[in-house]
Length: 191
Image (tube, rainbow, N blue to C red):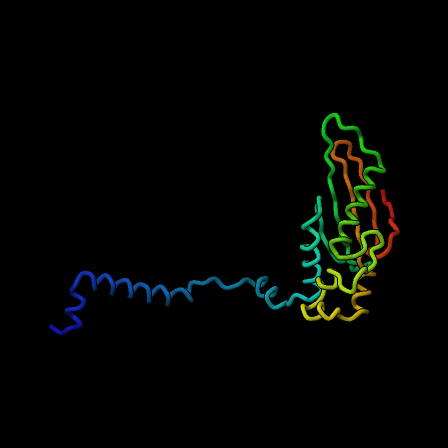
């Protein structure tokens, strides 16, 4: 009897041989059994995300951290505006007096101030207090933000960004809504 046959006759060695055999078959068949990506997945994998797409996502993630309501950021192609929308539902407890329109407007103004603060802007005017702000960081490569990036790009981003804030009082369905440019202190009250 040769040594190869003797090695396989030991029960422990037979188990090892069977495990190795099935492992090899499993690894060989794994490539065959994988599902092929659908046409939609392949198309999406070919489309790169732009720095603008990434900037919208970064801006939304940055601002959602400190907002008491729901917040989303989108781009309005028709108006060429980046829209930061925040909606707060202010639930009133039983026995609580109805909030006045001025109370609701103060809540809207607080949301606007909070967004500006989160972007390192002057909360009241939206002006750039220092040379660097979070908005330009969202829409630039890491090295560009450190070097303060091109100023014309930074200025255009600020000029095309708008905040829309809304407060809804749950019990009586009252609502107050405003739009304000990121830069400036002119508030357009919609409701």
